Image 1 (cartoon, rainbow, N blue to C red):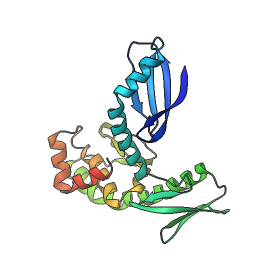
Image 2: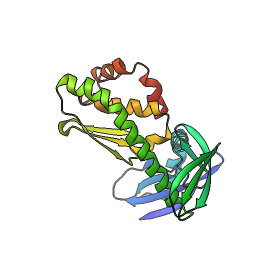
Image 3: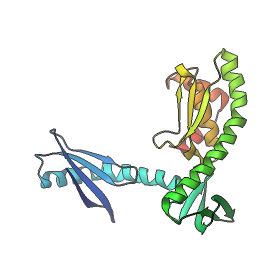
Length: 231
C-alpha cells in the first residue's frame, strides 16, 4: 500500500511517499528525483511515522541536498529549461524538425526534435552524448590497451556505452568487459578519462584497495579532482 503526500523540508514542500509493508521498523530513503520515500510497518500509526520523519529531518535535509546537487550536475534538458554538457550549463531551446540533432548558439543548446516533449529531448541528449563518448573511447583506449592489457598479457576488453544511473562505469574482469555511462557527457572530458582508467585498473586489481588506487594514481596523479566532480 502506497500513500502520496508532501513534507516540509526547510521552506520547500517535497513529495513524500509512504509504503506500508510487513516488518517492525521505519526507514527513509531519498529518491533520485529528490523526493522522500518512507517504508513503514502496517501497524505503525501516522503519528509515529510523522515523529520519525521529524527525528530524522537533519539527515533528510543533508542527503536531499546532496541528491539535488547531483541532479543539478546532470540536467539533460528534458525540462525544456537547462542542460549541462561537458561541465557547462546551457539554456534550452526546442525547435520542431524532421531531423533530430543538437546545435549550440552561445549559451543556448538547441534541440531539433520531432515532438516538443521531455522524452524526445532526453533521448536526443544521450544519443548525441553517446556518439561523443564512443569517439573518446576509441581515442583513449589505445594507450590503456598497450599499458594495462598488452603490458600485463591480458585480453583487450570489450567496451560498451550504456545509460547508467547508479554508477559511471563498471568492469567484469573475468570476462574482459567494461561499461561506460553515457551520462559522463555532463562532465569535462577529464572525468571520462578518469572513469575509463578506473575501469581498466580493475582488470589488474578487482577491488578498491590501496593497490588499486596506486595503479590509478600512477597513471593519473590528479584523479581525485575528477572523482570529486562526479561524486
